[in-house]
Amino acid sequence: MRSDALVRDGAPASTPASAPPSTADLVLRGGAVLVMDPAGSRAEAVAVARGRIVAVGTDAELASWVGDETRVVELDGRAVLPGINDSHVHGAWLGARWPHTFFDAPDPDAAAAVSGVLAGTRAQRRAAILRTGRLLAEYGITSYTEPGIGPGEDDGETGCFHSEIIDVYRELAAEGALLQRVTLLALYGVLDGPSDVETVLRGVAERAAAAAEADPAWFNVPGVKLFGDLIPLSRQAWTARAYDDGSHGDLLVRGDTIEQKAERLAEMIRAAHLAGLQIGLHATGDRTVELALDAIAEAAAVPGAPAARDAGHVIIHGDLATGAQVRRMAELGVWLNAQSGIAAATGGWLGRMLGESAAAEAWAYGAALDAGVLVLSSDSPVLGFDWRRGIADAEARIVAMGGSASVAAARDRLHRLLRAYTAVPAEQDRAGSWKGTVEAGKVADLVVLGRDPFDVGAAGLPEVPIELTVLDGRVVFEGEGFRSAG
Image 1: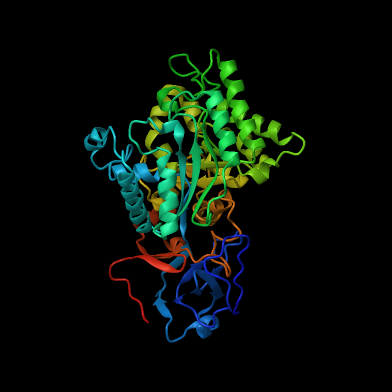
Image 2: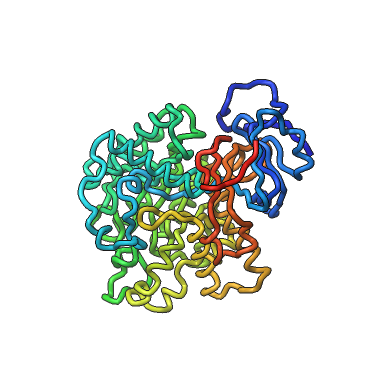
């Protein structure tokens, strides 16, 4: 069925209002179009005009969209998905140090040697972001979240988290030079160190008073990044269980006692919520997660405060979040933004530090997936940014924790895991009305894969090539040898 609807759904328009197009700029046909809606809908073809999806359906239904100037891509059975949304990428840092990641570097010694100032000037920061854009485009990534840039790191070692980077993103967005839509969380505390509550509260007030971005469809700063604790591998995630040295970790907040630190972190969370800001909280320990959920619930209960669900807060990492906490996240409308590669890389270490039973219960992706709160991301350059590997690692973890290995269960999970890299992070961005699925009226952010993911399963997904990336209706990456007509 042909649709002329160009529904903006609250998103800034890509082009000035005008008469609906009669033909498409781009038609992808003859493949498996995976809509990524909850029902798992499929189609054969998709038509794009003026940066928007104008029709989705069978090849025959979309034939009338093909005009003399339409580029027609013959998919020959390839798959089309919504553009991938990696909702945790340190964009400037990645561009400055790639290919030197921390956990899966091809040369660990070379990676360890990358230190000091990596992006100390505006030109270097701009170059790093542009490099990241090119790298991610090759992997079909059309949106990402830069989780923590701001004055809290203006004296940071690498220069990759400096507040000037916010201005660089604005500049690139205004120039139309970004190859992804970028969401950024402002950082007023320090990175991986104890934050001062007064400094963070001043930053929250400053961010709440800041003007909206010129075009939030391309660059948006909806909230703040807070640090609750560090990671289990450094014995600094705040935990109920004791580590092998008898400690329970700590909180990344200045204070004399753990009780004082906990109250100050809760104060930061409450202030950000009441200011109407989205919170991305780095929290790995179960006690930190519990504190955060309590603080969010308390803030949401204040008369006149935003509902927790409307705020779209995010627990980042949540390595040791319990099943009960995951279910509570669903009740509150809080997302769990997880990086499955970390589980794959560090599971053995966690067992030695916190005990095998804790390691067996950690990274509860199956529970989070069932609760509808799981968002998958990379945390690159801590890890690489290959989302295909992220999905394979998540599936392996779920099965290792007792998830059904039946064909039907694996197929259902694959659909939901793909959504965790497309439709669900769009919801985390509070942009699900205009991106994240292949539906008429949404932005034309698409990726073409060499095979249908459901033909190879999650384990085979990393071997499926990325053939084409479309951003706002424009081809920004095309694999070598990709065949097209028109």
